Image (cartoon, rainbow over all chains, first blue to last red; front, side):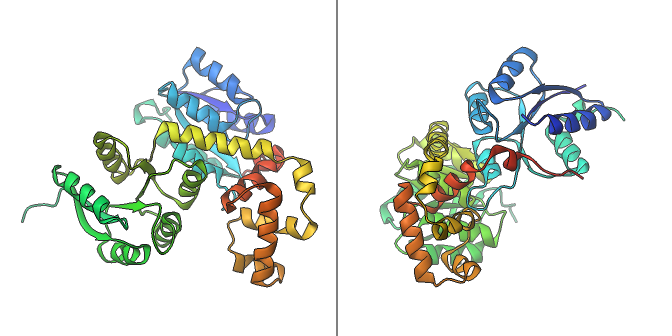
Length: 127
Length: 226
């Protein structure tokens, strides 16, 4: 089963995403900031990271750049709330190399659709 | 009839020499062709509407409006429009503006030919292309903005000036801000000049970045889920 890393400092959101993804058969690990996410990626090599853009210690943009520099194969789904037209951090995340982005709040269906699109079909959990 | 198998490009740059150089270079390839050229944003946008190219190569500096503004308009008309911005500048604020305007990539004119051709092919095929060292400078700019705005610098703004910040961050024009706050265009312009001066910035994107990054992270990362 694909392994998904959730990098978000909001425990409530992590819990919600974990419940939802595990119900679909995915394995889930968590990190509370960008630096912890990088360490987790080195250790566990997840297939996909769901990355909040506003993280303490090391934010989402910096984490994406570090993964680019490391030529990491991990797919990145950037998430953030209330992007502003004049400073749309999700647009910046795409330019930085996020493979997909989702604006909070998002529905279960939209999240699962994005996750499935980003993971290769062979890795999708069997229903 | 032979099936068309090349990428159709519109080139917008006010320098004839640059246009000639790019066109000649692309002629050495089998898959890239310049369909048309323009030397101003207005002329270029009209051409893009007419020929609907696969890719627009757009200079960041044009005689009528900036390349960033032209990009913003083209992407607003067609969100699928693929624009690769060309520039001699690696100014992080301009690159940040290009990203915000919806450019799929940003290429320095002094880049090697192979980098050019790779960038054109990648953007034309739907990928994004921002050279890594340019993104590093954008990140420093974004972080610098976040670190640079303290409650002290915010406190320097008058309540009237502060009211404009969220609207600038939402990407509203001076006219839209004037309408929203029941002010004249001139008053908005004056307030913005004061804001820029007090915060030590020169661009709206910087004002938006400052505002966005000054918001408490909780309010930016929370949300209700269905």
